Amino acid sequence: MRIAGMATGMDINQIVSDLMRAERIPVDKMKQEKQIIEWKMEDYREINRKLNTFHTNIFDTVMRASNMTAKRVTSSNSNLVTATALANASNASFRLSNITQLARAASYSSTASIANGEKVSSTQAMGSQQAFETNWKSGVVHQTTIRAENSDTVTLDTEAEIIHHDDMVVKVNGKVYNVVVDNGTDPAPTPNENTVVFKDQSLIFHKSLSQGANVSVTYMTEADDPTNPKQLYTTGGISTFDENGNEIKDRFIFTSDQSLSQVFTEMGRSSVGVNGFYDEHTGKVNVSRTQTGVFNTSGGAEITFTGFFKDVLHLDSNGQDGGAQNAKFTLNGLETERRTNTFTISGVTMTLKGVTTGNEVVTLDASTDTDKVVDTIKKFVDEYNELLDFVNGKMTEERFRDYKPLTDDERDALSEKEIEKWEERARSGLLRNDATLRTQFDRMRMDLYNPVSGALDSAFTQLSAIGITTTSNYMDRGKLEIDEDKLRQAIEQDADGVFQLFAANGSTPEQQGIARRVRSTVDGAITSLANTAGGYKGKIANHQFTLGRNLSSIETRISDFERRLQQVEERYWRQFNAMDAAVNRANQQAETLFAQLYPQG
Image (cartoon, rainbow, N blue to C red):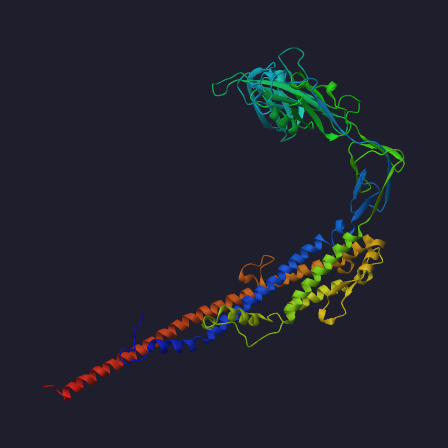
């Protein structure tokens, strides 16, 4: 705290403050200039955000075939057949008759109750329930996964004796192999595509496994330490068929501490494609295929069971509930069938929901979804007009040059509402007639107006041909309007031609679709504005864009000027302090002289 003016009686603090206020006028102007640069950066970046959104939405609307060539399908009886169409589907009509049966999945139930008069809980350990009294085996169950290394031999990392070799489960990338044991007899067993030979703690395959193949092995050993006790376990197998009629097998090992629910979970994760549940009312288990249709081309059972599934859960081919069946129907006079009730023909996905009676015929008509295409184009036009409105508003805003950014002293003298109104005018018109914006949006307008030339096989080469033109009001500065009737007519006439008008991928801008050209120009506009105001295209640091460099420069100037102001203020204080000291000495000399001239007494 400085105390001055004791000798002179002058308010030195106020005098220096007033002097410094005048000295600070240049730095206040620089801060106002800095504020204007920051406001312009914000305005540019706001426009860039809108451009970026528009850039993304162009791709997601008029450049997507699924939107611009969308199809719809009408059904004469949606209770029996429904359908949808892909964008590439042709406009066609289908007749479905003689739907005699729907596809159904194979399903098997226990041939007898598994409860045997006892209560069964699907969530409790099977070993604790009398209903699951079975020929449990004992041993320590190990599960390991080994990565193959271009070899036909995989060695198990265990020193304990492996027991119950016939219960081993070996899978390579999910494929189950039967295990045969080489016990030193002559001749030794030979592995084949479905068999692996176990010998001396190793598995020998019929050929080298591919590098990195997953070899999953479940095996049993005697207990080798108290922390690894024996378990009671049982085994079982399930077989189904793939879509080519090839058998798919899986083998399971279940321990007595597992529940029936856990059994169903393992089944559901298996490659055989089945799921199951336990019904408390009947005491039976049901297992069904996850896919509908007939897969066993030989006409036998769709699902076969062995071991635990057959002996304990009483599942076998005699327990089939109606069996698998394909959907059978006549399509445009051709008798055919499918494994599923939903299938695709010529881009039209049909779903059978019921069977026909008598000579009933269901007709499906696939045609262009004109409403969806119109809505897609409307969205593009609306977003373009909104963007144009916003930017034109910025470029035509009135500039109030008498309203400068407020200094700190001016801000302190105003209320918040007064500050808000002042800054609204101070910010107005910063981008008025901006050359960068005008150039980019002029290019965008040219992209929209110029025809699409080249190999476009369509009568539609410019927007006006499909009913999209600029408004007659010149004050709209290029906004678009739609003649919806003409647009609908064009879509119904040639939907693909309308799509190509927007999205054609030509080698030159003249051959490119309108939306593709506009999107390219928007990308260039984003880059140009980023070079000016940053915030996009990796332009983050001030030195990477023009306004950022200007901002850094003016901040440096302000910092330098602030240091000079500090020096000026120090000089003022030194001068006033020296004056005060001189006045004080003069006063002391006067007092001394007065005392000598007029001695007391």
